[in-house]
Structure formats: structure tokens, C-alpha cells
Amino acid sequence: MDLDAFRTLLTPAGRGALDEAVKILADGADPVAAASAMRRGHPADLAAVALTQASLRRRAEAKFGPDAAVMYFTPHGLEQATRPEVAAHRAARIRAAGTRATGIRAAGEPEGGPAVLDVCSGIGGDLLALARAGCPVHAVDLDPLTVEIARANAAAFGLSSLVDVRTGDAALADPAGYGLLFADPARRGARGRTFDPMAYSPTWPVVLDLVARAPAACLKVAPGIPYEFIPEGAEAEWVSYRGEVKEAAIWTGLGPGVRRATLLPSGATLTASGAEAETGPVSRYLYEPDGAAVRAHLVGEVAALVSGRLLDPRIAYITSDRLVRTEWASCYEVTDVMPFSLKRLRAALRERRVGVVTIKKRGSAVDVERLRKDLRLSGDNSCVIVLTRIEERPFALLCRPATSTDG
Image (cartoon, rainbow, N blue to C red; front, side, top):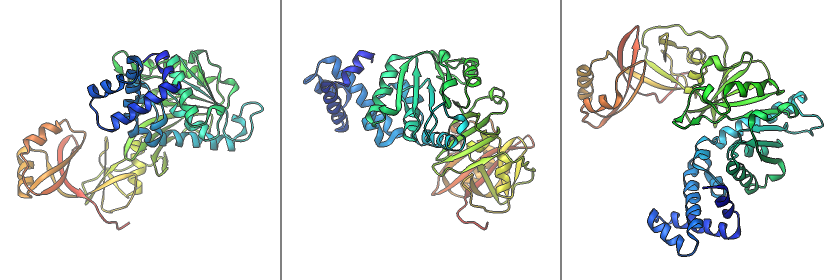
């Protein structure tokens, strides 16, 4: 889809074609039948772009929910766009920081959220959240099509008065006149997704130069960003949504640098306290910390919450005699502990008539899918198998989900 093709979707004829394409796909038509039906009433080019956009909207429902029905997307833009719950969390933090600290406001800026310079804005997932939080946003993206889509998305929600989106090079932007810089550098190259910040677009040195010239900044980065790339004194926050780590953000200019994990949708947050967990033998309960806490190196803090200790100092499994309800970890009751052996594990599961297993692993080189086949499961019962390493030895723990609390 090119810029001219997209603009046809914004005309009355284009909107009508898109509405028809959405209905055809909702009725379950296969791609060939859908294309044939669309071409009977529309030019071939318009039919194709309308069907593409309708298909993207269907895909976007998993991320954007009902909002997807009025938004516009590109395949890459949809993939990189921030989940609305995460974007809203960040926007609320930015709004709150602007309310508390007038120093991050631009000159003459009214009360409310700080003016934000959004570089690499993409299709506008974050700028929509910022505008909804009351922050005026000036957005810049290198791709003219993406810029046009971001404008259309702002207009779809009546936010155009708060949003200005223009084509431009992020490296040439000047963040000095804004309250906060928001940057979401592209993390996909010709060979697919990249995890090296030096391969981001713009590259990490360019991003850090922008940060150095901004009064405050929030950088969206991949959860696996190496710690050495986090600027000294910055806050690094890892965000988990319904148990899955979605992304990380680096914050500068809003307070002392900490390591933070945040859980959504609850909004619970955990910061580094210096807690260090001891190691010890397997007890009655096993805790698997949320991935955000693991990424933020806050396993010691989670262990303190459950009065627990580590099975191994390098692996994020916690054991405890107490069953404590916490959203920071999944809890399992341990029924059996054995050195890992396929023959022994298979015999134990056969004896317990286990036909369904959930296999978890940390610090284990075992191929989970191969193991699942080799176990030759048969029976009506279920079990959680935890594969891990304790003092360099491989172990298998048979568990069941814990269902009550004593703490």
C-alpha cells in the first residue's frame, strides 16, 4: 500500500469500500471470494487496498480491541505499535510527572500534561494515549505513509487538535522546546527483528544524543536490552501485561534512576530494594516470578515477598515453606523432586496416570517438545513439570498449582 492508495481510503468512496470489505470478511468469505465480491462494485486498486486494510483491522483486534474498528494500519506498524494498556500506563506517568514537576513543561505551557516530542511515532499508538492523557504531541516519522496513517488515527478519535504529525528525520529533531521526548526507534531491519540497539533506527548513539538535549525522556526499547546500554542514572522499567513481558522503557529527567517492574492491568509496581535471596533446598512450594521482575533483576525482592530462597543462585525459581498470594509470581505445590532422567520421569508420570503436562524450564537444555513426545503420556490426570538446574545438576520437579493461602 502506497501513500496515494491509502489516501483513497479517506475519501467517501474509499470509506464505503472499506466498510464493505470489513463486512465481507466478517461474513467469513475466503480471500478469493472476497476479492471477487469487492471488484464487482469497486475499481481493482481500491478493492485491494480496502481488503488489505480490513484484514489488518481484524488482526489488530487482539491488540487494540474495539478501537481497531476505526483505526488504520500497516503490517509493520501494527506489529511495532504499543498495546493500548501499556501506552496508557506510560502516558499516565508522563501526565503525572508534568503535574508534579513544572520544570519539565515547555515555556508558556498550560497546566496539564507536558508537551511531548514523539520521534519515530509510527501509526500513532503512543501519541493517541498521550493525547488522551491531555498531552499536546508533536510527532515525527521518516515514512510519509506512516505519518498519514497516524494523522488519520488521531482524527478518528477526535484528537487532531492535540496532535501534529509531520514527516521528518528523528535525528534532526530538537527536543529542547518540549517538556518530554518520547522515542520508539524501529527495531526491525531487512533480516527481521533486531535485538541490538546499535541496529535500531535511529541508532542508539543518535537516540542518546536526543535524550541529552531533552529535559526529560521516555525511550521504548525491547525487553531484552543489555544493561550496558541503559544510561547511568536512568530508570529502567519492564512492563508485563497479563503475565507476558511486553516491553521496557528507559526514563530520564523524572527522578532517581531505579530498576522497576510493572504489572498490568493492575498497575502494581516493584522497585529495587537491595534484597538478596539466599539459596536452599526445595521446600513445599515453588514460585515462578513474573518475567518483568526477572528482567528487572528483582527476583530477590520477590523472594522477600514470599519468605523464600533460590534453588540455585543463577536461576529465577524461588522455594518457600509458605504459600503466599502474590501477583508477582505463579505458585506451585511440589509433590516430587528427582534428578532428571527420562526413564525415571516417565515411570513417575505413568504411576500417577498423568496424561496432560505443562512443562516449564529454566537453566535446562532439554528440548521440551521432544521430551513431551518421549514421555508417552497416558492417563486422566495432569501435572506441571519444572525442569531446572540445582548446583550444576539437572532436576525435574513434579508440581500442581497451589490453590489456597496461609499468608
